[in-house]
Length: 93
Picture: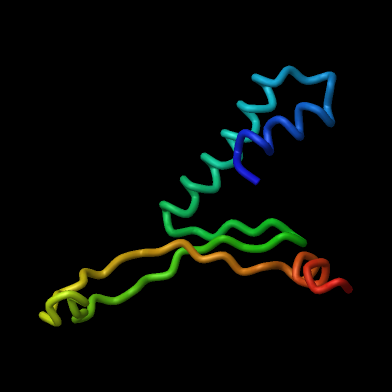
């Protein structure tokens, strides 16, 4: 599902809301999650999962074409851990 499909589904399920309002709500939620993670904080949605940021240390990598050593800088990457309810639902429990 992509963002526009999510917005359309929510708008269809809530006919009392205008689509532009639903779009604003969805964008606000995603923006808040993004801003919170950019600060290095964790976002937990009970029953769904938790978004966090993990730090990857700098390392020496290899260029697959030439085999030459390449310095890979330290970076922060997003990480998602599923919640128990979502995991159980995916596994048919």
